[in-house]
Image (cartoon, rainbow, N blue to C red; front, top):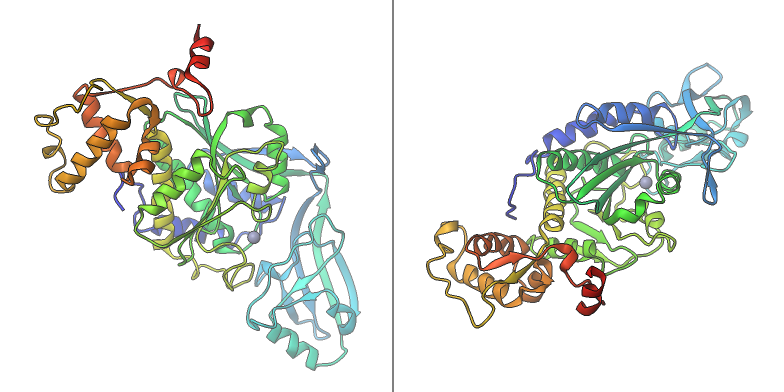
Length: 455
Ligand code: ZN
C-alpha cells in the first residue's frame, strides 16, 4: 500500500517493545495494574489518568470496588506452591474474593478452570460483578494433582476489594473542527498480548502519528476497562459524545491473521465506508462483518441511546483463534509486522477521514483542457498517466459541490489516495475549489433547506 505519509514504526518493533513492557503487569477492571499501564503509555503520549470512585452510578451500572492482588497460590501439604500467581497472573480468576483456607482436593476442584483441548495452556477467566473465587491452571497440571487423590491444600488469595476507583486514560488532539474521531481500546486484561496490548500499542502509535500531522478533525483516545469503562466514560461524557462523528475500537491487532472490520450499528456511516475502501485497496485479504451486539465496546458506543458511528478494527476476530483468552496469547503470538500493518491501515483510515472534502468544478461547462497542468510529470513514474487522466476526469465530472472525494472514490473505483493527489493538482490549477462544509448539502436534505438555514 502507498500512503501520503509514513505512519512511523514501519517494522513494528517499537510497538512490539511496548507490548512486551506491558505484558507482565497484572491488570483487571480496576486496580494498580491499570495505573501502571497508563504510566508506561505516558512515556509515549501525555495520557491523562482519570479516577472514578467506586459506587459511582453509570446508567444501569455502578463502578465496582477496586481489586488489587498481592499474591495467590495453592500450596500442597509440603508447603510447595502447586498453583502460583507469581508464575502467571492468569492463574487467578479476575475479581476473585480473598480466600485463606485449607481444603480437600475435591472441594478445591470446584474452583478450578482448565482447557482440556489445549492441555498446556492456562485459561483466562473473570468473575466480574459476581462474588466468587477461582483459579486457572493447565489441564496437564490438573491431571497430575488429580492423580494424587484427595489430599488437602492451602488456598490463599491475598487480594483486597476496597472503596477505590475505576481508572482510565484519555488523550485528545484538537483539530480545527469540533468534529471528533473516537479511538477506544480496553486496558483490563492481565498478561494477554494480542487481547489487548496490541490494540493499545497501535492506538499509542496512531496518536503519535496524528500528533505530528496537520489536523482538521479532533481525535480522542480513550484507554478504558472493557464494558464498565466504556459505560462509565459515556455516562461522564454524554454531551461530548454528540461531537463524535467517527470512531474505532482497536483490538486484536497483532496476530498473523488478516484484517477484520466490524461495522457500526448504523452500517453505512462514513467510518464504515472509509474502512471498507481502505481495505479494498490494500491488496490483502480482509473481512467485513455486520454489526452485532456482542464483541467489544462498540456494544456500548452503538447502544441505541448513543448509536455512534463506531466500528471495531481487528485482525482475527475475538474467539476465532485458538489462543484467544489463554496463556498462549503471548508475546510470540503478536508479530511486529502485523502490528506495523495494522498501524499503516489505521493511519490510512484517519487520512481518508481527514481528506474527505467536497469540491466544485470551476469550469463545469464541457471538459477542461488538462494539458499543461503538469499532471503527468508531477508524480514521476509512480503513477501511470492513464490512471491520472482517469482520476482527473472523474474528479472534474463529479465535483458539483455535492459529492465528496470518498463518494467519487466509491463511484469510480479509484483509490482515495490517488484522487486526493490529483485533487491537489487540480485545485492548484484553479479547476477545483473546496466547498466549505456549511455550504454543502447534507445527505437527505434539499439544497433549498440548507439555503433557508443560512439566511
Ligand atoms: Zn478479551
